[in-house]
Length: 314
Image (cartoon, one colour):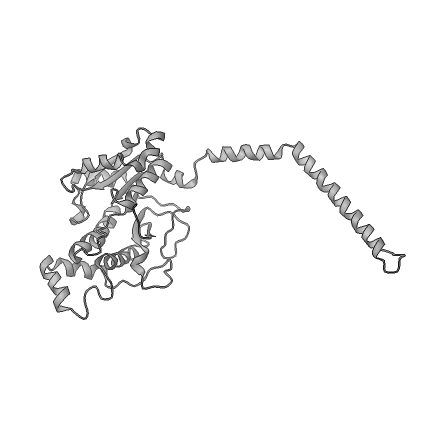
């Protein structure tokens, strides 16, 4: 306790406090000089640079793996392929499911993909990156993807990670074709992935995903959906929602009718209670149904969903 001689004790108190502050400043300056002498800052910078040169856990996850991507020639698919090739050089091969379209063969379409301006930076850093791309002939609208026996055997033996990006994004697509591509093919790809002996499991951080009782994990089968498939929910949370119809029932219904009969069924027979119900288009309807397929396989394989927003091109 301080003893003061002036009337209010303020003068002596101020003097004591100033002296204490000066002593604290001296200690702080002395500590700073000691730090500079030890070159602590320089050592920290060096360790940071050294750390930057080391592969991150995600790159280690992909090192030595074979990746199968459907929908690689579409907007999101292109971004995914470029990112994987540029950031994960340890990937052995990227197998791309490609179909003949508008008179162009699957190999011509793969060549156009490689020559896209999106891959300019990648070409400068890795001039031979195309050697890690393998074209797999197939079509998501066909039963079992229309893949040959040889290509199927290759995928089963070599692939450990699957990205299901393929989808028909036409809002006015017929319900029969939309179901075949967005629903049926998803089921076919999951069944095919179950045959892959190398399907990888890891528990590291990955992209924005959601699944039941899974957090901060990497999955070997990634289904690319859309946040708008659950537009009825507000807010849209990272969980599964009930589909407008069970996926098996949807597939059986569309397969039991030809395109013309199914269109008539939707437009005339069910005018007040259509197959689409309150869903504004076949794209959102089938993408919502497809998420239920993923839900059914949680636990049987390391599987997850990536819900993207709407992609735009300039």
